[in-house]
Amino acid sequence: MAVANCRIKNNSNYGIDVTHYSYADIHNCTFVNNSNTNIRVYDHCWPEISFCILDGNGTTNFGLQQNPYCVVGIRDSIFKNHTSCGISGSVGTLTVSNAIFENAQSRGIQYSNSDLIIEHTLIADNSDEGLYADLGCSLTLTSSVIRRNGCDGVELHDNLVTTITNNWIHNNGVAHLIYYGGSGISFADQSSVPLVRNNTIYDNWTYGLQSSQYGADPNVRNCVIHDNNSGDLYRQNGSFNTVNYCCLQAPHTGTGNITGDPCFYQPENNDLHIRSESICKNAGDPNGSYGNETDIDGENRVYYGCVDAGGDEYYHPKADYDINWIVNLLDYSRFADNWLDINSTISLDVDNDVDVYDLALFCEDWLWEAPWEQGWMLRMGGEGFGEEMFMSESFFASDEARPTGDQLMIPDAMQSLAAMPQRIAKKAQKFYSVNAFNNIHTRQQQAQADIQIKQLSIEELLEWLDGLWQSGDLSEVMTYEKYLEFREAIQKAAEQ
Ligand SMILES: [Ca+2]
Ligand SMILES: [Ca+2]
Ligand SMILES: [Ca+2]
Ligand SMILES: [Ca+2]
Image: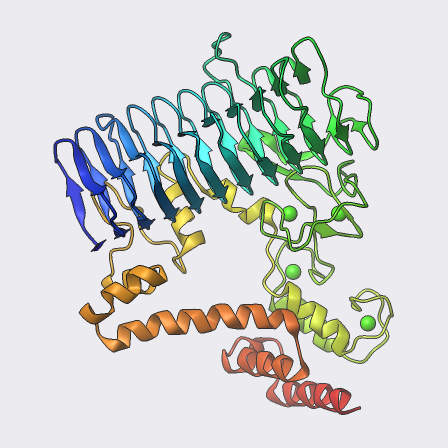
């Protein structure tokens, strides 16, 4: 079953009811004014939801309700303005990426006894907790932003495995309800040790982290916990005893803990990137293992030899020679001007010559933009501004108009098809031209190309250069002769 490109509105009970062993895929649909729940998922179902807008419009209770034995996948979707929770469920599995949960009159996300994997998601401005999980949940929360919720940012009770990494959790507790609290993360009676690593936990109404008297002692590493109103760490009748390599509000026992101003970029505008002078740079655990992990921006988790404390890893590539916060043709022309010279300000590796090794490094930073100017978390959410930017980040190449009312997120059928997850695309294929399906293929090839540029060979470098030339951009900064000379020099270097 597939439902694509539909407006689903003004129904009583449910917009879509997925029940009893259904593989319903819901793509590019808008839900509004359905009286109880926009999507109900009940009893052994496996729906995939992509590019949907579930709008409670101040009348619908739930965006999505998930009941026993279901596996729900959500990506590139917006849940907003529900009178209860954005999404709620029990006894199932939920995976979420690139989504927004905002302005629910209860919790943004609420689950019991479920496996939850949430990444690259904004949970903001919900009246109660941003994320609430209890009674045997396993939670992986990564590279997400949880801000300005009414009570705790994240509240956890009696859960199993909990992993919280590379997030920003800030300015929660805006309702100022003392009984319900307003901490960044609140733990109660956790049955195994939660890992809380590389998070930035800032300016919450009560504590950064708090815990009940009983339950496992969280492993807190490489975090920035700063400027929370009641304090950084609070455990009822006890203390947090595993806190290392953190930048804290007050001195705390442990290895590598520091105190002082983290030097956020613009905290008043939700921008918790750290500045070049920040004491959090390289303050994380130098012996930690970070694999292919990325920071909140999607940049490498480790730069300059050591992981930073907090969700952000500071990075400003040397290839931005003119320091205008983007690596583009202006930088490239300086690079080309110094080709095969000795120039320590242009060379990007440890020696001072400017050769193919430097070009390979230059390619890695090509079109880098400063995340403190362009970060996704700064563009998502916010009145009348966020959504189109969120979508352009996720999908659109440029600034499409923000959908309003019951408009679809993707107004164009071919673009909608190109954005479909694989499973629904297969189902939908026969309804569309082969030509349109090629779009998916093209996109996959593009994704492949992005991966390959990381494993640069000379051939790829030359292709990259040729592509640059053919795009016409290079001719603005150099003549064709100069370009050929440069290309030839690279080729020669490769043959040596
Ligand atoms: Ca670093
Ligand atoms: Ca970063
Ligand atoms: Ca530049
Ligand atoms: Ca060099």
